[in-house]
Length: 117
View 1 (tube, one colour):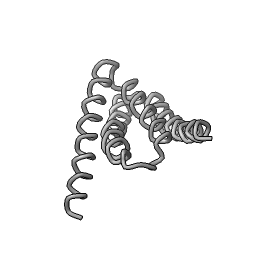
View 2 (cartoon, rainbow, N blue to C red):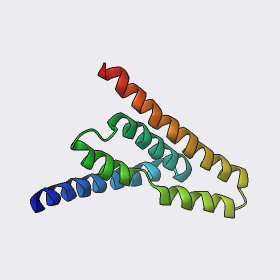
View 3 (cartoon, rainbow, N blue to C red):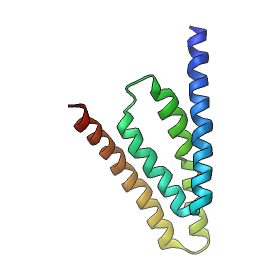
């Protein structure tokens, strides 16, 4: 039992490391607004495709996608836009992340079910 927990924790940790590195690279290369939206939407789509149905989900969903997508960066950037007087940009940023993120997740689930049958 203990060994299983260690293997699971290692899978989550390895995935988290990889996801955080990819997020940093994407946000650095594209700029924070677009980069945060891009990683959040891509992560939601892939999460919908995975739908937590395998042991690989510990590495991919919990680890990689958990670190790739980031509520703290999303929240921090929304507040930064708001505080700098870019109220409409802040509102749009929030709406795009939430609505498009949920839509991307649903699309991923739909694509998964389409390819499974």
